[in-house]
Image 1: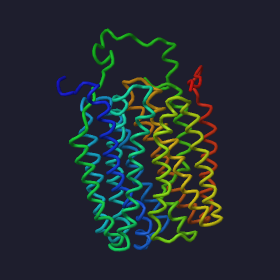
Image 2: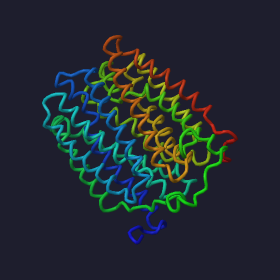
Image 3: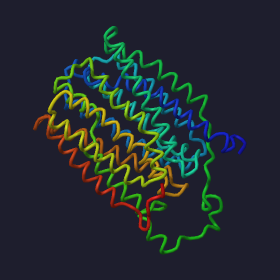
Image 4: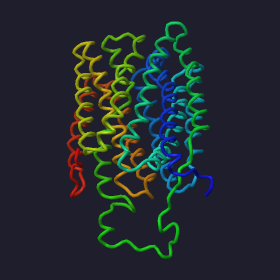
Length: 407
């Protein structure tokens, strides 16, 4: 057991290392991400191809997340999975500069999302093992703030590089922050101790579950409240298509291609400054209520994009869009982790990521199809409606007897 550092040494270090790694990884990702729709258009592709690319990429990620979540509960060392995920995702981004057809972009996005799926659940389990339960929201929020800070630097870097080096130059440049992210992950991440359950340590003396306890679970170790939240989040995800459609819609309304990275900047500003406070709030107030408010904000933003009354409205909506992310991304992870026992955190996160990613696959395909056959407005109205309903459903998913924590 000597290979594991004491919990007190690895905890705060891991949170900051994961945050720094996320910062550089997202800088590389966002440099390429916000340029991609315009690059696809330059290759002769459109909304249908974008929907196919993002849909397939997310589908493979969903299965990878499910499998990695299962592994996270079984293996002693999770760091190799996390590092491998960062390595392969950042190795393929610069290859975008060599592509000449949209199907080649599909292969690159496939690899990128597969790598993200592999690292997701193990990383988030390691985060949960590095902090006390009453600090989960703050930990995920801090990492998310640094992650989205990278999403500010990324579009800004792309904006600076676009005029001089073009879109392919931006893809090449993404290799630098990507390499730093991988290096920090290799050197900085410390393994956390996987605490095994009684049944793993001494199966012969483990107590059988009582009939009453068995009835309180839909699946082994996963409470019914977890699945109620999962249903709400999955339904929402059916309307949560790739953000690339927001960029394409903005261009459709009249925002110049060269300003596309700024769209990423404005919403990531509010995302960055809102994530840690939102995570902290979720440690003191109901996580379900906070996430539900995020869903309602999403619905309002998508409704505005559907109407697209003016270019100013699009810019303001993208700014508000970051608040939705801040109120949901770190908060929902903490909600999932706290709703299950330590021994099945990886499985719970894997199922959560799997269900939402699979729904996102459908969302991107549906949005691309609706846009092609019925125009740009309808898919945004559909997404707004699903988000509103999911927010209401999330508010009803509170566990029996649960009360709001005192401020």
